[in-house]
Image (cartoon, rainbow, N blue to C red; front, top):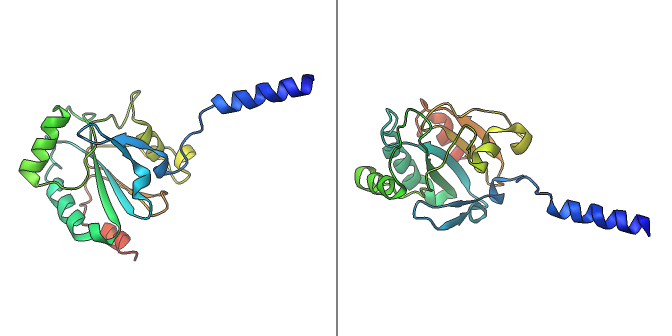
Length: 180
């Protein structure tokens, strides 16, 4: 009887223990308009995750991101933007203001998510996964500035991190999109 009771307690404890996400597809985020967005809907696509800001020296990368997105979106590729105000308060706007800015100034049509934190104590769980080898199984990294890019393969695995200075249409990124 004691064995059954111990087994039951152990089983109950395991059911309440949260299992950390193992794949990019295990995450659910909110789009910039507040609707739920399950990353599992991107299965089979290559994904570039970018933390963005409207008042940054790299903000013109929105134009290049949009160009790359339009060119490759029909080839199982998507870009997802995550506005963040972690660096020099360069993204002070509300989700609505950010959305209006991106559309009016750069014609952004790739999916934009709600504003999150990409570092620090309030780091979003997705960014914890992106930056921790213990969680993503690939590498540790640190989000160093706005417009840092994370590349996710068709299986939901982290492939690489591309720092802000590298353009979204660099040879390295385009070769990755094209499978070279």
